[in-house]
Length: 291
Image (cartoon, rainbow, N blue to C red; front, side, top):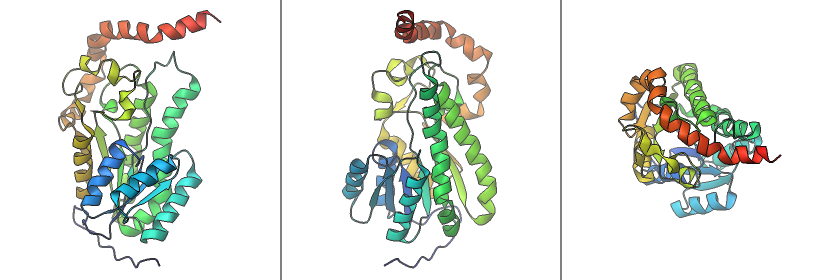
């Protein structure tokens, strides 16, 4: 039987009661799962959403019987709508959403197919838009909170991040406009900017982090543990934060963004970048030459 909701708008923070429900996409692993784990410990009921149904159901079961795992793909609007329906049937409503599902980028534009580049944009940007559309009426009804997983990738220009950074920049812009559209309805919108995080997204052999984040200046070179990042993200959700960063020093990078996207930055990276791009594209050029 569906429980009766009693939602109260808080002044600056979300109540950590058992009646609070958070929906997390990309919830079967990584930052999504660890953030949900911390919110569950604070009393939230977590609805974990991921395209791997077996994995996400196992993850929710590990959190306990108060939680729900649902198979859905952020590139499939109907599956997201069904996930929201199941959450509402089970818990009566949704108070917060963490639009977190994403995939990484690990190749140059020249060495990528158009389909590969557009897939990155579809999952990381369009997927977050679909997530918000699917859950927005529930969030409005609860005067709740929407959190977007952005990335420190938007704070600077680096090779092999073209489609990924573009998608995350779109997330940032989308969140900024949405914030203005829903503020009068008592809904808060936040953007979280994690840096390099030790998750499966960056641990494969071809990832940008695996090949040299250390060549960037501090704090852009820092690779954080997922537990640290999840602590910061869960705190941001509980506080209904407008923006949050991890490492926190990225806030200063944000303020100084022109220094990391201008001509002087390009010159700083140019020598190392040329060497790396030639190496990254060598296989592509060999393959192209054999055709």
